[in-house]
Length: 152
Image (cartoon, rainbow, N blue to C red; front, side):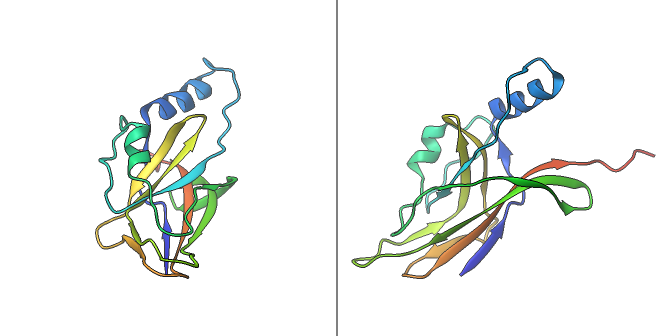
């Protein structure tokens, strides 16, 4: 029914800090990304770097057959001329043998280590209804670093 790709995710402030601390050498522990991808249902929270995990959990999708997906990132991949990313796919399919619980998917968020890492709401008109058996969302998750072109 629908395919979506990460476009403009918001990073949790603490996650961005952890990446920068690791790169600067001030945090020498391993920085491992092992995300679990969750879908946001019909009533999304406001997404900012300071949104709480509880806000996302309260808005999590609830269609028949839904479950968050553990993914393995691979890469690097080149999603555009000025970026590099790690990528993973997650497929969600509506499925029920009894009464079907419908939902409209408005975005996604990832968790790891007890907190969220990145989240994104789909653009207007890009929400995905899951209304019957077989309806699906195929999500391509990208964890992207932007590369600036040379300054002239």
